[in-house]
Length: 479
Image 1 (cartoon, rainbow, N blue to C red):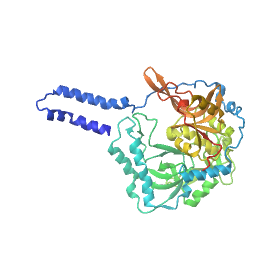
Image 2: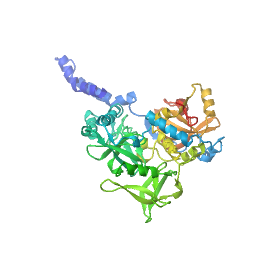
Image 3: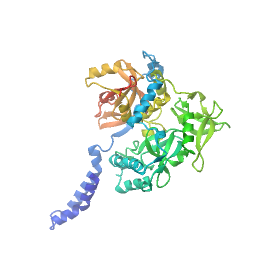
Image 4: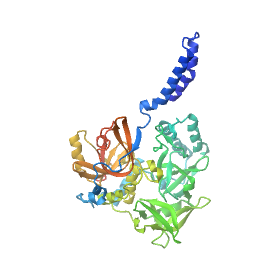
């Protein structure tokens, strides 16, 4: 709106001057000066109003107030009174899953019928456009998105092809792959040049993740799918179609092997090392009659699924079942990610703060919602007091490994308190810091252990100041 109005005014400024002042009370030189001023204001407006993100600089190599021994899981586990206390039993996890499904915080692709009506599918496809126009405003190079840009994206959604009821297809992701809000690889950002935060990047699918295939893009390069985390668009080349729903259900039921390491690789029976990898929380099926081998989903030239028997490397990083949900397990699993890179919405193949928590949950069979907002809605929340003394007292009483700390847009796993400082492990993009030139973002972009003083003195404030709630894994929210 702003750019449209200013552009209209800039285009008509000379006409206005001449029309109102036929005797040229304003010289053309003066008019040129005014036009240059307007051009400057249009370019500077985002900076003056904070539309551009603060300048990003390299962050510290080592987190302040963190000793080397604090970067070991056992350092924190030894401090816990009950490290092996069961936070969520299998029955409680199932009850949570059903509750989250009812609340729409997670999805169950298997709950989708064989066919989906035209009206429902069109409603789903249209629902994201309001978000697109509200959030995605700029190209990767900083240029504002135009009405034509939005129209191109909307055209590829292929809404016109939705006629009658659609027959649902069934498939598996054949590799780790982005889940997009729209069928495009183009980056769109909320702020100019903020390219590490692509507003169209929703999440990512893990290898062998089951999906219901709902629709296809106009260029046929994208599939609109429903996965356990949410609906979205995925590259068609990254999904293998299964023969029918029964075959899809059969593989899902057999997928009992869970990746417990941060990342594993695969070797064929001919000892060929594959480029494919699987991250923590991936569930794969054992190869028929082979205890040590896994069925790795692959895609043939026609897009159909087939399976390749492979050996996971290292073998001990794959478990035959999920682990119990205890503080020890969650902390041990979290520290396997220490120093792994940050990727907004699963970008770059890794993850962000909420993706880290989701993968910890998957190793325990807990299907956490994907976003920080979803986690805030899903778990028992205890609001933190505004009084500094009361806030510190409450934080010191919360159990490490059993509590998530929430502030808008960020989530962290509580480790414990050391020398009156509260420590967490989290996937952190950056630290807001005050300099002589103003606020900057010190880019960290990895999983770190830190205390909550990060950001102190900046306009945004420290993590401690911005904390809103403690999310408890035990006891459950009773609804």
